[in-house]
Length: 258
Image (tube, rainbow, N blue to C red; front, side, top):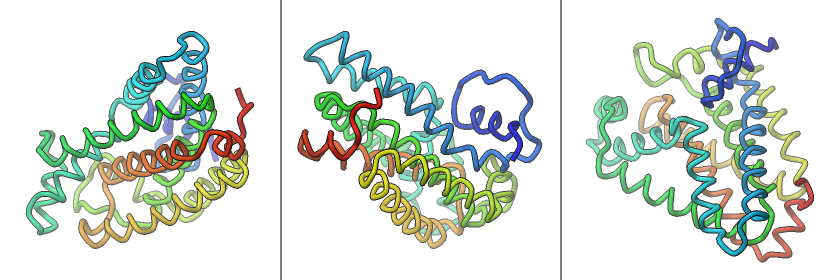
């Protein structure tokens, strides 16, 4: 596994100006996806910790800051995929039309509603997590979601007949690369003990269900569907942890990392 795959992973999933040469084989980035998620989550966790120390009693403002940082760091790529997926589901039922809708750069009503609901849900969850004083849990959703993107890319064919942004990743996502990503994501998730393992395997199960949906409705996977999965899982994980009672939440998620 060469390090230029890591450079490709960073340049694909973030706006960070990582020096070096990308790999000619774009799919070599997939095993590095969990590590990129770890670093993104670390940045957001540190930002959350700094906010709670610097500004007392305004966790809602910190949640907005974290949302903005998350969207900027990823160029809004996954949010765009979520909106395109929602618009496609709200369109005509034939597969070709749905794929065409996802390729359209415009934003429809279904996509706008999906974006609004997800942003509201994530903001609510982030506010609660900052109230609990445990921003270190923010690493876990970013690790798990990026791992599951590699899982989805490695288990389905590419849905479009021609070339596309995600095509090289999907076509080159061998079983070995998918397995490396899964093992790396699982090992990182164990840092949160039982909660990390439960989160990882629950996300894996949800990814398998989403893969069945993608195959049935779209005939495979696209970049937009990878982004949609990322946001669906991230929202679910954040809401799950924010809904736990304070002491239970802090005990299970391993407060003390920061």
